[in-house]
Image (cartoon, rainbow, N blue to C red; front, side, top):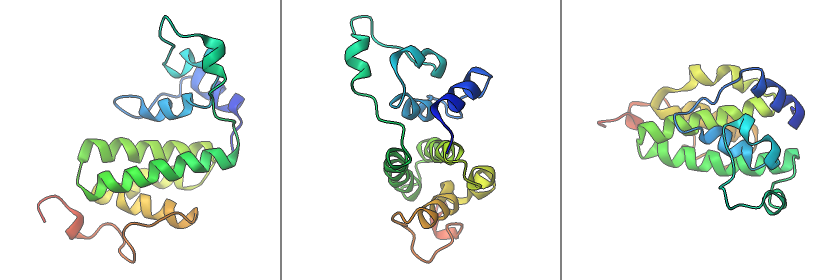
Length: 149
């Protein structure tokens, strides 16, 4: 797994958010102190206390990253199964971002696994990390998951 420093270095070197609304980096921001939020494209409200905000960040551990991955994967499955194209696409990018953080080979395969709103990718991640697989034995690219069926 990448360290927080490695993530920050890559972001500062030009790695960009892969979503329209930066929700992938928004998830990352929950793990970073106030002083690093700007690099991720965020900031605190003018009336916010940085010291208080920093008390609420998630500790950078693989366990905590996997908890966030599980939550995001569940949401991704929900959006894909409900054929919510934009939301499913953004959640595909969020889960892909976690694969980057975890230095998982699925990161490099994610774009090739986008059929039917990302279901094949979501399934691969679920199986690898022993998380709920919402499509059972299906591959995720079946026509029944396509819009209009």
